[in-house]
Length: 185
Image (cartoon, rainbow, N blue to C red):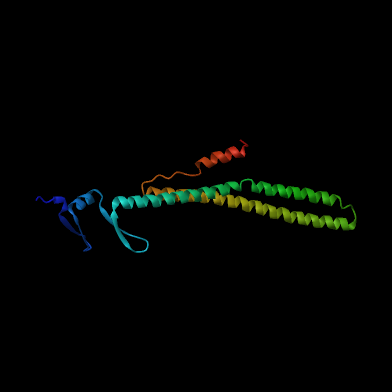
């Protein structure tokens, strides 16, 4: 009866003293797809073929890439969503100023009217300063969100490059859509 050489047992001893016993056929398969020992986040170790590790890494990178795309897109869209608000706030200020001017004109010319006009003017001045600060803060938030989306994109690009992947900027199509919307197209 002839013996199959592929069924002979082979014992491997690693540098850390661990030993693994396998058939010669299994050993030959390992040469094509070597085993790697992976330490999981919970501290446990697991031995798996390199192809299994690469597939696991690929799934994790896909999930990371999808989450980063959502974060980049969200920050950018939120920033661009604030584009028209500083002007809208200024427009509200102009409307209030016009209403106060009309109210002041309707007060008449008596001593009480002069005092009321002065109070209206103080209120209008304070409101104008407050609305100006609100408009400036909105502009600052807009810039911060758009800047954050750029920083997130740069980090994603760098991180994915270490795994040999090329990142795709999720903002590329948004700029065209937003600019078309802004022109009323």
